[in-house]
Length: 578
Image 1 (cartoon, helix red, strand yellow):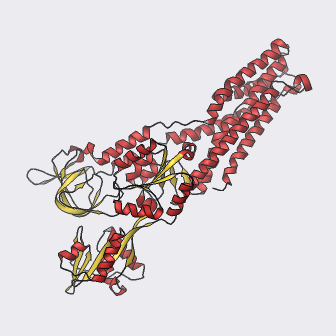
Image 2 (cartoon, one colour):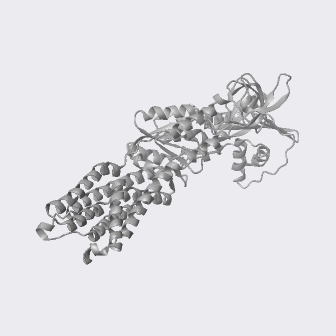
């Protein structure tokens, strides 16, 4: 295609240049100039090239952001049992490291002292902090939200799970995606054919018929009329219209090349937390009377735990102020809160907290508690003076359009898959609600990455996620889609960002892709058909019979008509129903 762009524009330019400086060489009725045509052709081709190259050259900085997850320094406990601040990279196997509340875990390690609630969402996708105690492993990059622990370093900094994620991202980012351009396929045949026709036209008119003026005019007309501006515009103008329409629908297409691949997708893999679900813990049910809400909310307000925040939010949404002053509050990591107010003991937490404090769980409250646990919900019991008054049931709610999206995918012949770091019970519950049959649960990012690669052995895969832990999978998948509410790293890694955070926009992306490629094919077909008809006329095939000789001026008009047709056809994308 580049050859014809060069030949066509050069022919138009030099023909016009000779007309300007050597007009006497041309009859008066053939003194036409095509500078503007050459300029417009080159401008549009360069625009298309810019759009393609820009998507490839965007240097994403998600690797740098990911590296910032792990802290630079660590609290090393030396042989004299003194705390010494050292660089994480200097830690060795067998070292002991102290992790305080609010600090990130510097390396993969084994807890040898203490316990804490660890926020692992950035690695595993778990929506709730996980209680870790002696003997449990913790991963680099996760956050200690509550408690003090001592770690035994079991992996060197460069071998941590976080480091492996970074390595996988680099590998996925550097892969070459084979893109077949329809224009290039056609041009591979079209280019040499046009050049040969142009040469033959000159030879026939000049050597055989002895009419060198017509030989020059006809051969130039062939090049001008066949100048593949329609071919050059077919893809980029459709992409411009597609990206514009996508933005209007809340779909940011970062990599236009994936528009050619979405139609081939056979698997749509979903993360759970924050993708199929809202990603926010909320109280869904309670059997506690409202008269207790003020004191409960006031107690929970003293904790920064996500569960406490969910309970406070639930209570405040009922226009109840949680402003009672609480003293001597005792937050027990992994269990809950214990506090005494006016010699009355309040317990808010899990069943173990109540059992440890010999609190009685009344039968009706126990039934509610066990029923909610069976439904895979988190449950917080509340007891006053050793007797329960009920409990709060918490869950990560399903997004409103999740069921609709899964059904739409199935109707399109695409198999939905759930891939999550959450436990099997919770994952199965969500999968059942949205009717997903294939579920992979309790997988860390490296395992997610491997699942994507395995599915890719069968067909092309689209992955939809939003967390830091999803970044390798998003990058490895043939199509990576992320939500605007997700982590910056996942947005950098994705090919498409759903600005409005609506899952149904993923379906619109597929429809947009199909329509875009349909229009590209129509554009290319028209450009090819137009040249098939126009080139013989430009070569002078009608001259012996009808005395009609297509001059470069009319060849230029015909060429422009072809371009306008392609552009108008592409603009249909802006009004097409998705």
